[in-house]
Every structure is written in structure tokens, then in C-alpha cells.
Length: 374
Image: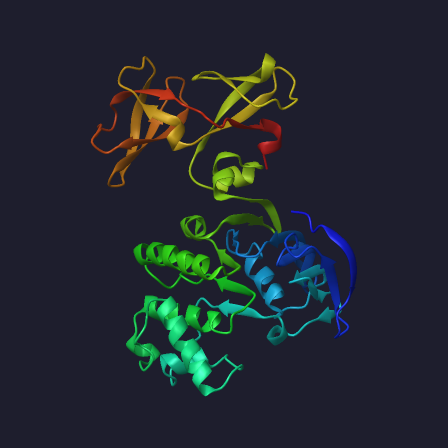
């Protein structure tokens, strides 16, 4: 996403600022960010941006640097290189740091960070500085209603469930009307079922408030439930920043293809006219410039393999996982390759049974085999 800048200058406080069309300017812009702990580079030239009202997510395995990026955006960590801009103002560069309290950033932590000796209302009001006492009380009641916990202002945190405490933490972060909300693994202390429910509810709340937010998580389901745009992080860089749909169906790298969703790779060979031969047949691919005969690995998702009793192509059931409405079958192809298939659960086939399958590939994704090897 381009910044569409016309010129740069300084604000009345001496801070660098951007002069641009407000409608085209990202609310958050991170450019070439670098961060290190001693000689250990944690973030290596990372760039991203968010427009107002967008929910973004940094998704990756533990240790990839996603929480460090969040801390740099919040102003908790200095940067070794690059820039961070908020609302057209440069807030971080090497040797310069706008304090956290001047960034208009809200934060929701993994452990809620509520004060146990304060009531719910007092916790929410803690960060409110503007207005008189009555105005602050009205704002507390307003955000309690927003997070669907109206009437609980007199309770203490230990009287609430984990999900309610997390909503209180969200209400406290939203109360000062921040320009940007940062969520650091906010649902990791909750059980899986409630985590899914709460992530959907939080998205509804943020969208209703037109709040710009960025989430950090290692949980794909959480990221897909909550975010409009997701950056897949690996070793301090973003491998791909895209919509959930495109990350799943059009991964830009082998790592993203492996990390997002489920799937397997089958070996293939490039033919003329951008076609690829697999053991399951010949399929059309997007033009890649690869010469004929190039060996590739083709990504097949479980939804690419359809159960079809009328199909002459048979596969052997090696394993099945019951998922309520569906089975996830692991199938062995005639030449020995393995694929996954999602099948409605009323098709309850036994291990070792052979079933008919056919391919329906809307997005054929392939990677050169040489490049795919570590």
C-alpha cells in the first residue's frame, strides 16, 4: 500500500509529520523496521500499513518477532532502524521515540492486566483524563454497553469470568478513544470454544466503533475470525501481507502455503502452455515462465479433493478425523501419494476402504521443487 505523500515537514512540537490527502494516508505505516536485542536481530526490515477502520494481524510461530513489532508500535521499545508513523506523525526512528502516552494507542494484554482492588468501572476509568467526573462516568457506562457488560460496573475482576475480564480489558482500552488498538494474544488464556466466540464478538465491536486495530497471535482461526488483513511472519520479516482468502488460496511462498490451513504437496512436471502433470491428471496453471520439464510441488487443500462415488479414480482411506459435519480423510493415491479430503460425515468409510475421488482445483499453486527444499 503506497503512502501517496506530497511532502514532509514538522508539526508544532518539532516532530516529523506527513502532509498528504487524509483519505489516502494510512493510519499506521511501518517502514523498514529493525529491532535487535544486543547482537541478535529480531526484526529485519519489516514494512506494513493499515488504513483507518482496518483490523490487521501479525500471525506467526513463537519467536518470530510479532510481539516485538507490537511493542515498537506502542512505544515500549526503541527501534534500531526504519520508521513508524501514526496519523501522519513519525513516532519512532533510530534515536527518537515519541512516548507511549502521547501516541493515542490502546493496548489489550494477554493477562488482562486489570487492577484487582478496583471495581470494573474504576478499572475502565483509570485511563480517562478528559472531561469532568460525570463525563467520565458516562463514558464508562457507554463502553460497558459496547462490550455487552452493562450493569457490571460495581463488580470486582475476580467476580467475573475470564471472558468477561477480557471484555473489561477491551472496554478500558477503548474508553479513551485511541487512534489505534493493539491486541497482544488477547484470547490465549481462554478455552478454544470460547476463544472462537469471543474473537467474533470483538470483531463486531471493533467494526461497530470503526476502530483501527492490530492483533498478534499464533492461532490461525483467531486471526481469520478477527482480521481483515494478515501478515505471516517468519524470522523477523513478513512473508506475505494479504487477505485471509488470498493467504489460503494464493500463498506467495512455500512457507505461507505450509503455515496457513492444511494441505499436502504432490510432485508435478511443467508441460507446454502452463500446464502441470500430476499423478491425478493434467491441470492448467497460471503462466510462470518455468521451462517445460521443470519439477514442481503442487499444493492440494482438503477442499480440492472431492468424494465422488462415480469417479474411476480410487483412493485408499488411511486415516479419518471426525469433525461433526465432516470427516477429514487422509487418502493414499494409486501411485503412493497422499492427499487430504473433507467429506460430509454421513459418508462414514472404514480405514482401508477405497473411495472414488475427483479434483476440483480453482487455484492451482505450485513451487519449484529445488527452491522448496531447505
